[in-house]
Image (cartoon, rainbow, N blue to C red; front, side, top):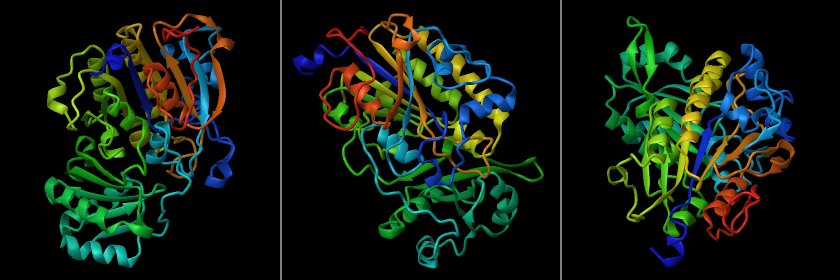
Length: 425
């Protein structure tokens, strides 16, 4: 470690992404086919009769927009505001990449009528699967109800897409072994290039039977085969600067391992939150989850994706489940905040909206919340912590750069007002 990095080794930052958690329609929502009243958090709160999120409320969540049950704070310890996406999209990859400094002007291709014969025919030939089922946009749970039994009978993989740029392959683990499913996804990833370069190929293993109460997806064994970022991100810069980066959940898949020194997949929000807390408490055995040849002495950035709000509740238009998931996250955030040191920064945000009250099952083009907190911040009038509405998710990278005292020159600027010692003025 260089002398300059030694002085930064005590600094840490945690980014918690509540997947699919928007906070009001973006100015360009019509371009993406969304209504002006989409608002994932506020509409969920209205639908369930109010939310109880005391920890996020204390940091200013209720100051960003009216949320039934989440009162605005008059004196806040956290910065709060909202970010409008600058990239052309409303998907997981585009949102996460932009958080880390990559603006994507070109959207990934979409397939509202299914994939063309040149893709499907080549997939069948190169995998040897002999045939496929579906090949159209579908709800990930409904497609199992409708085609799971036929898949078990034929052995044909269920291939479907959605409102995202995804090629999803669902297979029963007792019919198609995981290793085979993963191999088929790798083949699909090679096929889906050029004009058909979808953002992600997703392995969707499932289990169960109709006689046993239906088919159920196995979240822990899901794998995303994503297109790598087109350029180096803030994660790469952080790792190159000698600061370790720990990706929790599907972060490793979204960035195809780039910029991560350590990573671990998770099967639920609870698992991801527990692992985040363990990382803060320095209870993680990092030697068992190393992902790169770079082995920094200090993990300074913990990057967590909590996918259940999106995959289990947003896409299924389950406002009640969404509300329960937010309450669970808030409970864990209380534990996380209590375990933070003065030199730790917590950022809570999202990658896009997924309003469970909106028509259809797709993501919604929304602002995302941004909350930043450190035990070193002083409690002040809410107006002094209000960052307002800002253009670009990349301000998250700018804020991390400011906190970790690095020298990132990419997109994004800090939302913090720090003195030379890194403490809020």
